Length: 304
Image (cartoon, rainbow, N blue to C red):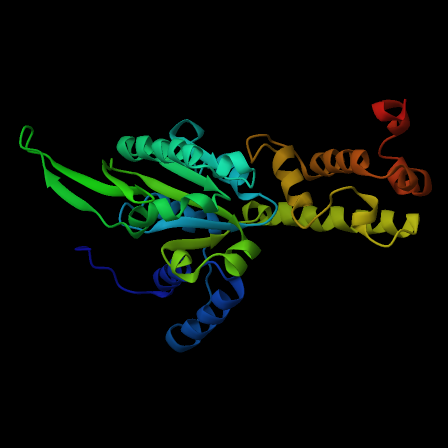
């Protein structure tokens, strides 16, 4: 870029996090080395800032968001990093009919339309489509002058098997690939991973410091419930519980910050919500849990 900026700790850290994101442990080691050798201070940008910088940078690589339990898509929409009205979401699956060439052609056509309009395409667990987007992900642009208008057209090649077609690319076009973190590093090819700017996004990355405090408070409450029930773990008490359950519930309670609630109101919401997820035996044996939902057995329709 023509604009010259002095490299300081903040700029260096931001650049490193954008270029080497995707593996938090490795990223921590890289930052520790650079900070100790170059600057005597520690800074770390938020994941939302890194993702937003990529989405608003027309010269950047396409983006791969690594996540767990499919959390990233609602987080991207909920935090307004992506606009639902300007984003096409294509979801892959292992169903046989979704692996046919006809279905792939349909999906490629949707990518083609998004390319032409300069909008964003989200590929969610869509391993089947990457080969067709080889030139697109490599950003191997071709430029052609339109003799009628004098405009320079930017083109990319889409391919299915031996057939390929040059398609126009509108300004602002971006591909966002969302994939499970373990699947990305265990099953996807390294050359494919290297084509993307990668970031890890979990629900807790979106929380404020106060909301993280609520997380810890609710988890202590859950541990008290587990101890009272005599069951071996939180997962044995609350159906479907995993690492992102509490942060996701907090974000839902406050509608990603669009609802004003006190900490006590949020905790009250969450305790009632988790009481609905609890096993009946836990509700019977835990006084702490039962006081959060006095009508548990009356309002559960599957109890008759």
